[in-house]
Image (cartoon, rainbow over all chains, first blue to last red):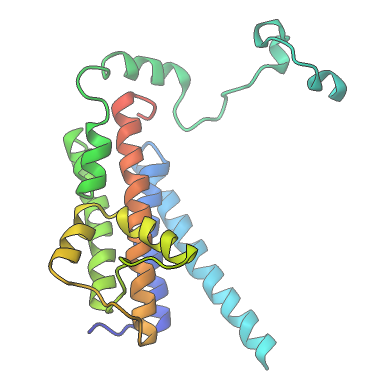
Length: 59
Length: 160
């Protein structure tokens, strides 16, 4: 059984979802790459930001 | 001016400045029209159906090898990781949330059917990682639907 940490699960999820968003939402390869990286950063960044927010609320 | 917009006026009678602008769309309109002229032969829904049943197949049919490979790798990777995490495959639906989960799972097409046939996936979620796995499987299905619709748009010429 594969048991990733919560963070690794977030990174894997963001990676796969960003690839699909990049390929399907833009027309040309450079734009696809740029949009994929943008989505990946937003996915992981928002997960980290929300994690800190919940940590501070819970204290 | 705002009150004017509430009155039903035929589109052709509207001044040019008030008409819907397609400026800034992902694919310019003239390119869409040009692409659509040569792509209306044969069964238009084949890439949509193929892309749903086998991830990436819709793009492969349209000879978009790179895009198809990326889609196939991502969807397959996400689905396999979900199964490896002992994610749940929805089958017996009892409430509304289960119906939504089943709808997401069905987006995986043949992957879902084959997994049910071979008895893969857990029936119940018992550990945290299995819950992650369940979400991976559902989202893989939803992303596959997006990819299949993209293949359809390429086929009809709506996207370049």
